[in-house]
Image (cartoon, rainbow, N blue to C red; front, side, top):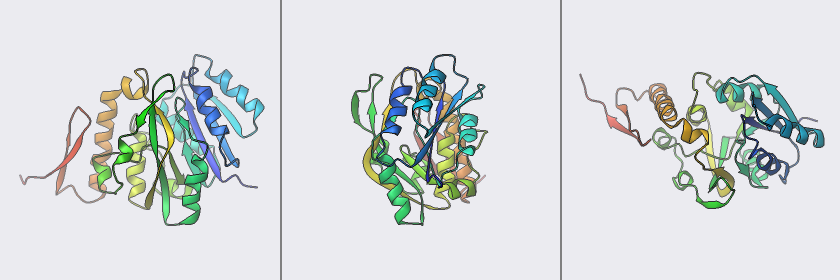
Length: 254
C-alpha cells in the first residue's frame, strides 16, 4: 500500500535538538507516513541519533550524505520520497501531534487546495514556548506574499503541485522555501489552518541568525523573480531594507 505522507528532515550538526524533532513526528495521530532524515555531513552525533530511531521504527529512513548545504539536501531528500503529500520539519523544531492529521484533512477535502500551512509558536533553545508566531497573524493572500512570507510553518503540499512548479530551486542557498511558496501560490489555492501546530526554535546559533544577510538578499531575489513572472515589472520594483522588511513601489519611467 502506498504511503500518503512523506516528511523530510535535513540535519547538519543538530545533536542537541534532533531527538525532540524526530519524536514530535513519531507522535503523530496519523501513522501512515514515512520520515526521511537526510544528514548533510554532520560531524557530531546526529547520524547516530537518527539511526537509533530508524532501528526502532520502520517508518524512519536515514541517508548519510556528504555536506552540500541545506537547499541541495532538501531537494535530494524530497526526490527519494514517494508520498502524495510532502512536508518537512526542521531538525531543531517540532510539530504538534495533530499536524499531519489536520493539514492532510484540508487537502483531502478540497482538491483545489495545493498547499496548506499552519500557525506556529516560537520557543527558545530550551524548548520553552515564548509566544505566538508573528507571521501567522498576517492574513494570507497571493499578493501579500511579495512582501511578507506568511506561509512559514507547518506546510503540507501536494507532490503534483511541487512537481508542477519545478520543486526546490538549487540556486537559492537561503530562502529556498520562500521561492518555492511564491511559485506554488501562483498555480494553486493555499489555505491556512489557524492553529499553532508547529514549534519554531528561535536561538542565536540557528541558520536564520548566522546567515541573516544572505537570507535577506536571497528573499529579495525570490520576490524579484516573482514580480517578473507575474508581469508586474513595469509597475513595481523591489525596495529591500536590511531589517528584512520588503515593500513595492511604483516604478518611475526613465
